Image (cartoon, rainbow, N blue to C red; front, side, top):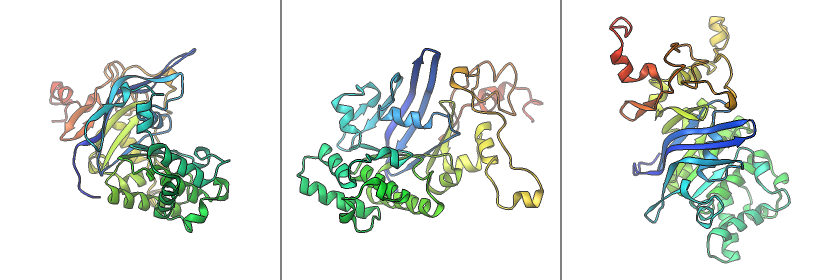
Length: 350
């Protein structure tokens, strides 16, 4: 990918999104720290229920009530200069509505549910362009045709009159990408955009997104549970578990020098071609399930499933995200440099 400025387009610090329900408090996002840089791809990974999608929706202030952002900052750097804290904006105000779709665009998981079934593809794309740019309808139509052509839609002008149900899954996903990129955003959030697609279409979509990123220099936050995709497209990786980032670093750090037990468990669970045939062993699985958010464990959120958990330590205090080595962060008591120094030589394995 192209080399660009290291200044983050989006810098998230201490982000918390809570749901106050009759049954109790759900901490869907609980103190997330991460940066998304211009021209770079940050992949956010974790099991279902880790808070990945809710974190992404929080960035755009589209959390469904009774959920809301209750703490933290989300500093967004505009292309024209200056920055704005998205967390401080009114979710229904003009300022955040001007940012959504124009400066920060999002591709949702299921395009059939995201596109209106009673409006044509052309109407939906033209409406978005007219909403964010002061141009005429004819110019908006031409930009729509250009956007559809750019994402590989054959005969794009004719497709303007098509309804979403007339298109295949891969075509609908390309329409969603065209809609997201029509206003040339500074940042794209892609929430598992290839989950429902076959592997060939998935590869084409990923290649398309990479090409468009190289051309425009946009920042990308790519949410996925597929570590194969992460290895292919990521520059940086944030591993989430139960609403928190438990490890963050470059793709090389995460794949070759992982530190957090959860990251290690995710990597160990990747199927290896021919492994069972040669060893006779079953696939490695992470023990247990992601806890229900109303029954969060005390201490480290992963301690109930962690093979390295230490009683009296991991089940008491929630570890902070600390820099373990340059630009490589982890939230684990056992990897905390201060904890390692406090142990005696035998315990430390010296």
